[in-house]
Image (cartoon, rainbow, N blue to C red; front, side, top):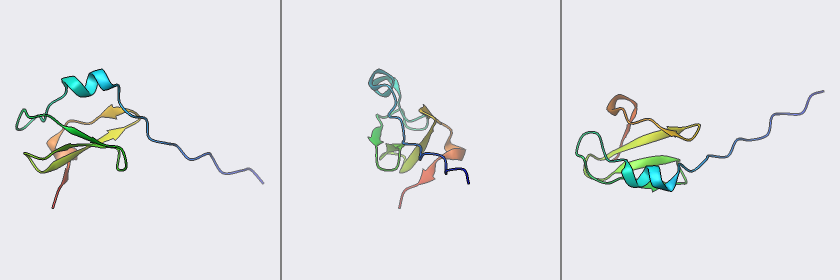
Length: 66
């Protein structure tokens, strides 16, 4: 019986990249949420996902914050 694949741990994006990225809607800085592996825009109340270490900076892919 094959063993299950190892769990993938989120890869934090490069810190230099995080310094350069801004919210595509408000142009404000983003906060990295390592627990959810997202970049959060408090101004736009959106959380942009990070997939395979790549930030997805599309509003259509973002999660709305409550």
